[in-house]
Length: 289
Image (tube, one colour):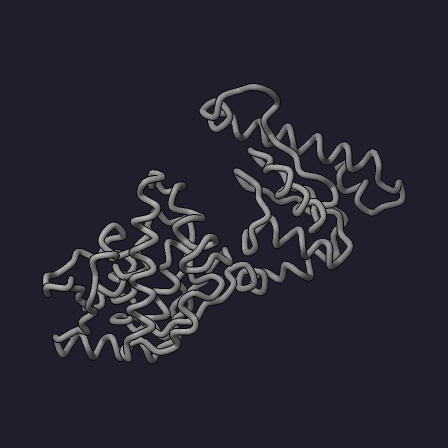
């Protein structure tokens, strides 16, 4: 996450006073120490040797060193006085069975044998944060959402005194999504591989639809397992969860033809909804057009 720290540093130098960092869809598992390194922190092993700030080295770190350079210290203090928000799309914690490593690392290319090493490193960083006076608010480091983007959100709390917010709630407010859903007859949402993870857009939209008594259909490339599917259906996807894949085709073909597969599936969902909907609904003339 070193590059995130560079962008953050540049934004502050250019006068930013509020910064929202969207934490998700990363290929990192470094607990955000890359950000710390970009802001001037140094990391050392038990012999005082410098440790490169990457996920595979976290278990070797024994000491955090704050920036020595006066300019970097001044910049760090400025960053900590600003409003830094880590917007997250998951409730994954920093460590544990529902933590960053065991929830997401395999998606990012980690092999099964890598997971214990990565988790050991994350636990080590968490312990160092909690035992050091350099890092306040240490009760937040393993809170829900702290595992977003390989623990980047927790690193932002530690190094930048950021706070975690739901990315979905933030965007929802900006686009007035609640108001739009409350006036709808049917809501369509979806993603590549649907699941019922808190914070993920389709699940959160389904829950909003449930609150307003509005039908919701989830259109996806891959339908989740039965447990996740039941959570989605009971959580608000009242109109069903549908795959765009029409039959036994390989992933490459599905990706190449995603546009037409999505159009075909969406049309079928709408037609089925219209067939069972009240003929007096205002929805019917709109769809006929």
